[in-house]
Length: 611
Image 1 (tube, rainbow, N blue to C red):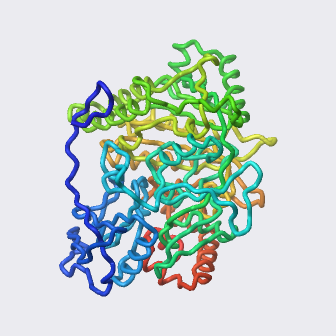
Image 2: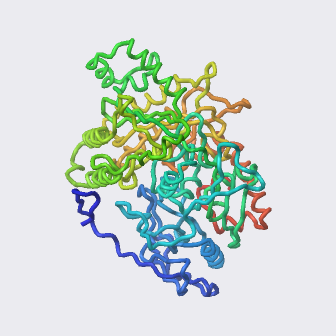
Image 3: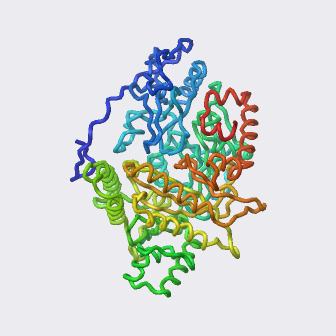
């Protein structure tokens, strides 16, 4: 029995009895290849290493079968290692190179694209194995000691001090967002201007595929990186802090080596009065003029007596939020009549804010533990056989209704949630405990008379809603979510060159029929890649691009396989620029590109950039 919340108990199966053992690399001349491994046949038994006694490295025995969090990618790893120090990373890389094996880092495995390792490769992790892969999530035990998690101030980087109002902080790659959140709450001086919602994921994992937060003034996490520290193919620690080199190194997908830390430019801490609210669907983001509204929405308008005047006021409110609020996010749970609107502005911390509480706190009804339990119960429900007997639409309706009920709706200013910016960024906990499939596109938005082209933003949002309503098979059973961001300077960022980006995400359950989900992904990709051409400040076309870490494999864009679309359109020039900058970094550090890719390569990224 696993007690998840006082007064509420959830019965869960016992955790698998994985074993760890010290992994001594002192005898690196001894081969550990398993001659009987059938790499192509799905059978690959991890041979226990003969090395013993190294406190920096543990081999996880019985964990050679790799599965990502969304369970859409799997393979048989050669070795699964938990490494506690930079010295340990260096030793692993030297040994793996001698063995002819590649090394890839995999933390919480929160990517749906094939950015991971492959059969026979060495998987490196910086936190305990159970922490990373078992549900429900539990923090690492106090006994777990590691050099690869933590936050320290940095006075300057390459002789450059942080600009006024900012600070440089070195964040170890194994640091979770929860650890960082606690640090921000404790010091109350600096925080990230943007972040992903989840608190469990690591900074190495969110930075490598160029993740983002929300807000028209925000970029990506990789744009905030001022220095990258990594272990190269020879097991030597290297540093990249040149601004030009960082355009590639800050979002390099692990191709340079094992990143052990990133130094980030943080902002002064902000405070916000959160007033998330549930709004009738047509009034949260009004449909653009002339848009063919689905019948179900027409019925909502009629039943609620929504007038043209209300729609005009709603349009003004939507534009006001976009232009005045710092954080911008909208959630629609399929077949619900309301949308959850979560936008807020911020101000700097004052002496009066010192005693602000953490959010969501320890409340019984909707505190951290309660939210974690809610997500765990949702995962249990989805995997409960009688739930699977329901129609897809019924499943989506039940999940949506319960999700909407669990979210706050505040209309009275006196009831606003006053909290630190770093707390507001992580307004929902327990997401790790509920598995899903996820596709997301970064849609470039032009400007009209200096303002975002709201018509395109609204059309993209309503095309998602309409596509969901038009499908009888209910391929979307969790949520449609939109955040608005700025652009990016990082070479491989999907937002690169955009003035404004509509980042729209679609999520469904793992029990949704795979073919239904894949066909919907194609359907919505067709819509989101069909809008009018948008150009950057230099007159170059900027293209809709999927989030690198989400699901997009197998899609077609404009009758091209998506990887061809990447090469010929979406990243034309970017792949060449990345390759050139990458090559310069490798040469500067005394390495060769081919040798580096032999140790740290990824099949998908090599296919796109280097082949």
